[in-house]
Image (tube, rainbow, N blue to C red; front, top):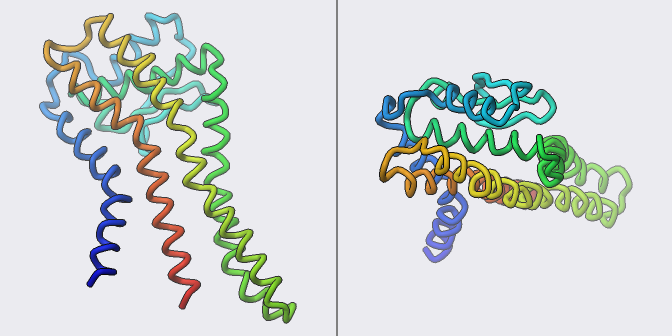
Length: 227
């Protein structure tokens, strides 16, 4: 019983941030016609104001993000087309990343590299972990298998760290770039700034949620290998 309670608490701790992010985004996604312009239109307007016409804005099914290689602000369908508070706030957040790139903000470049490494590193870690029992069998040396397992586990353990170190970049895009733009440009309706701040906090914490979800993946592998 105690193990079930402990497991539930751990699951809540890991899934909680992700659920909170989704709740905040969904809550302010209605009404969908709150603002005159859509998320895409605001992003384009902000970029043009900053003389950043070289940066494009397009719809994506890969989640809201800025691509520093393609120089493209990409918004999910809802945030691209919607006129909601969530849509315009997330659009400003992604423009914040475009500004970081334009100004040569080096942490953004490191974040892009780290996130790019995360997927391949996770696959490599899985392959190494799967291979560790076979290494022991082939070499007839339990130590070799244990070392292989340790290397794979260390690679897997890098995933939460890789995602978590991107948090300062997200906070900078939210509160040093997006919020000042929305506030100074008077783009927000009266009373919406506190809600926009909450949405920007959620946007910044997306990588915290991803990092914690990576811990579940580690726990899953530990459970599999203990069988």
